Image (cartoon, rainbow, N blue to C red):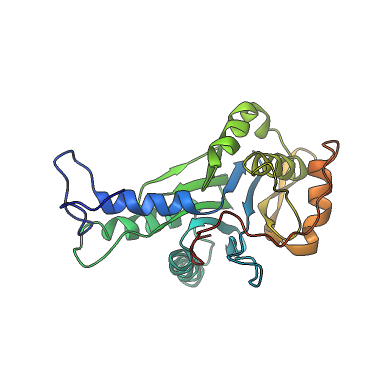
Length: 269
């Protein structure tokens, strides 16, 4: 990346048809720690690798609950993700107050996409330097969406974004056919295994640096049951999930205090 005459704002195209500030924002997403999302016929799972900027700091929050039926995970600038998640919470609350029902997942994703795209049409604004995986359920079933800094959104069966996410995507592509029939626990196990694929060889998943978010429908006698609200697993709650996912691999999760790659901004997660 280098400075040129076409990257002073987010509204000027280069002769090659590129908007460089959007590309720079996408680079911020690639610098963030990896997060993985998977969707089955009944549940959606978000799995994220948390990062601490130094030994003296706590691990940054990577998964955010938006509503009882909706949550997101982030890769990139945490401050930008906070702005977008607060906007989503306001829209979810407005839907309940106005229409008396939870906001459909596709609609709220479209709204944040429109908000991000508007930033590429005003000289004084900049693109959001964060990528999101949005997981939720509504009357049409479970959904997983990817949000990009350009404002583009797309529904996914499985997805991984952030640093070293290509190896996680390779695992997802290799096991894609299994996800649709997976239950809650199986989907979480696949997510943690995909996340583990993206780690450096000297790193391990622990209760300190991993978190999981799950939302879906319970299944009773083969039929859709009650809503299982968005549940965030963090800290010691991760112990049983990690043991189940890593069983048979000869890996025992232990807390660690080292930071992920040196040189990361404290705001990039």
